[in-house]
Image (cartoon, rainbow, N blue to C red; front, side, top):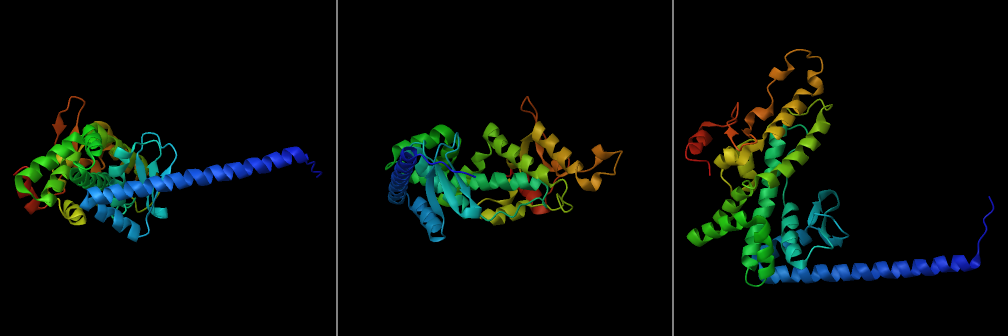
Length: 307
């Protein structure tokens, strides 16, 4: 092979490469400086936010700014211990997002394809509610020092903040208020549905795995996992109501597992974890579950509302 180099073009390429490298270094330095300033503001305005952020950094979590992430303000990737933030998002939103994503880094989910679709939906919901409840609590502490962050959070999750404030103003108990904010997360049905849809898509990939969909995560386990939310809540309609589509897809996925491949008749009668869901129809009416995964103590609590 003959390589022909035109010296002028070659030198131009080198110059451009140097300029590109300098531009990248300048951009990354600006991003790092922005993150440092955001962290300083969090630590100054919220004791809870400070605790969560410092814990993440001590565990080797790197917090950085990426390019345009669309509608996503931030994301935590456990495999690389990295919190990525959307460069185009305003500071008032990133302040609370950092707390949220760093809280995710503290969580230790137990779900995988060996658990039922119902259990995965239940835990993913709880993981997100937990991160959001901590974000809410931190934002409440920031409300005077960072009023724009408070306003931005309330515009997106006003129901959670109202629940937190009402509880805290009544009892002056931060953990109890955080629990109420956690529960209020489930009330935003269309928002919650986005997470359900992602879980269902993930769980469909387990159809060929022989051990898939066999285990369950109980309300007691979820309560123990998060520590500040009662067991009865995780068995309640408030925590377990899904759309008809989610319930239908859950049943189809589990009935479509390879272990049922030779079952030519009666597949529609196979019991699935979809039976544990409360199901909301298009008119907002909620049907109770076909089966309940509840022990006597929880059943008694449910009689009092499970709230």
